[in-house]
Image 1 (cartoon, one colour):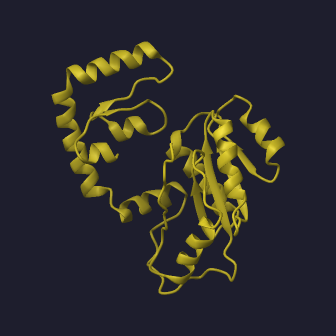
Image 2 (spheres, one colour):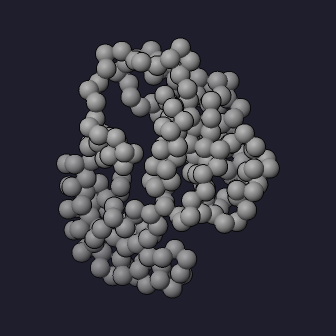
Length: 219
């Protein structure tokens, strides 16, 4: 999305909703086929001006319609809710807001386990954690059950991509009466007080709906 929004053609994949996002602004081959990926890349390079023009047009569409309000309405619709409610003047959190962490993963258990350990080791730990296994079929579920028995595992029948996995995880969190949903990455290590600081910001400032953090790559 970031590349297309500034008119840069994209070399993506056919997983999840990526083809819909890219549309004519790039190529989305099957990542399991090296020959298909090579052909798609050659096509992208040979026809770069055409793809660049399509990316510029698609980027204009993104900038005009992909506002936070638009995205919020789409997300609420996908989660089965109606219209976006008016912003409340004050929070309706309980004294101890229920935090549900959602993590999407696909075929990288070692990295997932490191990240999950930092999520569970927070000074203010989440009340529940759901790991969405995007059809890894490599033993991820079994290893999670053994190493992290307290974690809820949502195993998908097919790889829905990051967006599809997040949507499924958020539906699970809402069904568990979450007041705050913490979207965590399976390749990120979190500082021990990350969640405490983020939830305090939401609790003290009613104008905030979303809180994010900065990431550092130490490699």
